[in-house]
Image 1 (cartoon, rainbow, N blue to C red):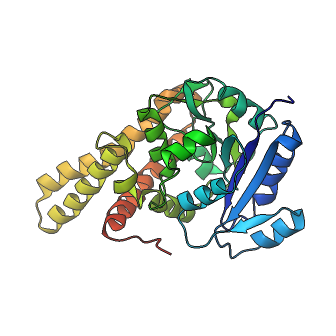
Image 2: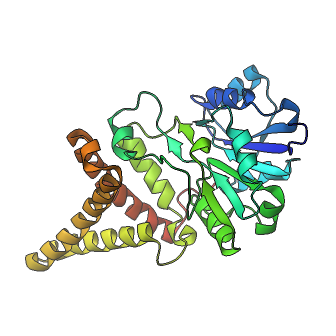
Length: 315
């Protein structure tokens, strides 16, 4: 692999003391030539022991304060020397051949970006298992890739202008859409799947995560045809109407709205379970998924409308 392209691995970090050591160790152990890749760690102002752990590991890192996650990623790319840039979230662990397979996929000129899905850790609790009931078993062309395991040619990344720096979340979806509009293929490879150690493990953290994800929904959605956006919109409007109509004792109409906002998480759950296979989903996971999906749309609705009024995460 003497002619292997030089790769820049960018790791954005914010308060990842629990996971950053495992993340970086997985990068140090890559079976790609050591002199053909660099690791660029960018900290977004961590207040926990992240800096101490990075110092203990002995890796150089940069501090970029005040920006959204897209700006942190872009800053890391601005320091990159590689022909290929890839992004790994600090709460994720990459397989040993992660870089090798990412580089291999980008040899196909029609592929504009490639990446992998998030896998559960080895001992997930009920929240994690109920939320992630399906992981990809086949590599396939997709309509978007996650930013936590993503490979692009650096020239393409710069031509696209990088990640959107104004939104709190969804910058990966927005970049994926821009890549697709240029006629490129987005290729999700099972060999690029990474273990996500940072999935929420309790209800409070789950609600916070979904609120954050949707706080820039009106800015990050691909279009009004985006199914998750439309479902969240239907859920939020029908839920608000249910409360309002119930207050004025218009129970017939409030019942109609009740059926609508209950239907959304049920439909979402059925779609997930159906894609896996009903026989492969236990009752505990089924009811857990239904409960979490209701909370998912409730929290996303709050984040979406509050985020439209003002930025709750503005630094």
